[in-house]
Length: 149
Image (cartoon, rainbow, N blue to C red; front, side, top):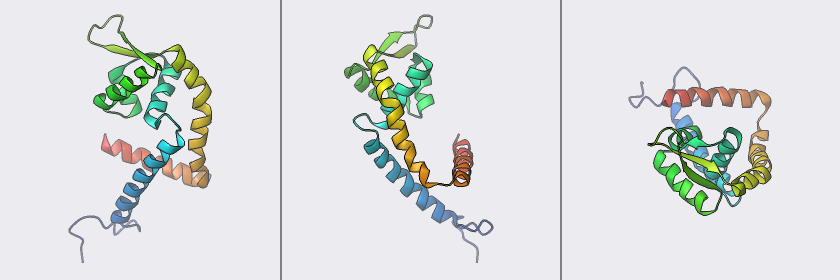
């Protein structure tokens, strides 16, 4: 009997429905865990500090894309980071329409003291996987992300 919903993978062994449910459960649990593991700064804020620290000032639109946020969500996040004295908005030197986001001295200090230990703590979750499982997970997730783009 065929599955009219298209959620059963008859050739691959694991039903698509199971993959859908597990992916949704993992995404929800991982994001909840990530915010706890990230300490006082939620993971998206940590990621913004990381990108700005490693790459320097960035156009907000480009930064949003780099960290996987909508422009609206990055604006809200930048408001909070700016209020905490970690980033500042500056006009783009050649494009009047663009705004750059850059780290303040406090943002540089926060990035330098917290990035490595916090990213290491977050990375420990993946120590549950064997090297082969990590490779398979990475390939599978890249394929899925590319399929969404």
